Length: 252
Image (cartoon, rainbow, N blue to C red; front, side, top):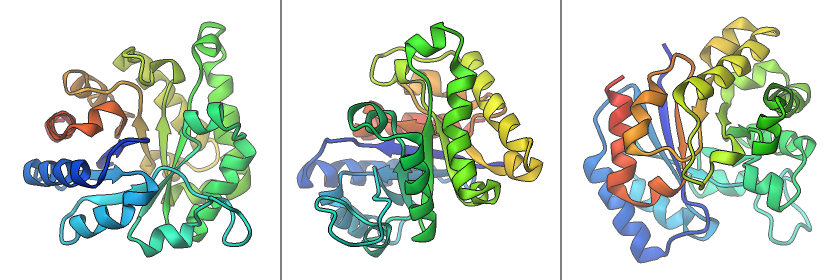
């Protein structure tokens, strides 16, 4: 049986004082459940201080992005080795905001996934469609293309050491959420695409849902057979909201 992962993507929010308060609140209320893991992904400047605060706890640390390069003249980039060095275990790759705002292609995202794996990090590969693509009936085509690029570059075996996050772009930060049934349909499809190459990998990979997850809709989403947790945006910035989502996972 797959465990749940509830991951908080803080995006470009926070400062030292607010981060300390947020992490302290999450740690104080974190549910004791072996089947649910918690992860926070602060902005780069705060990774070290959050890592220090997490020492001795079960909560994991991740980065919101990672370079596809190991080192060199890449001003402003951060390598997988650097992230691991400051205590990261996970790295988000291919978030829709990176794809949309910064033009990251599926090919580049696949390279970032490869770099993360090579640097000992667990990549969280984000895939998902826009509202226009959903309304045109292209959801599966879009998801298959984004996923396929990662499989082609890294091999199906790589997904034994990776996480997938399905994030419909139309539901991110909009207040709109895919219904549990809509999300489950895509999660099932993702697993079926992987199963064409390796049924065991497909069965065991964690697939998170991302898109306006809150305490009051988390249980419905997490109750679906192919949804293994959430990649949480806005609700990860308040300890009470994040913990409500984590508690929903413990009750499944």
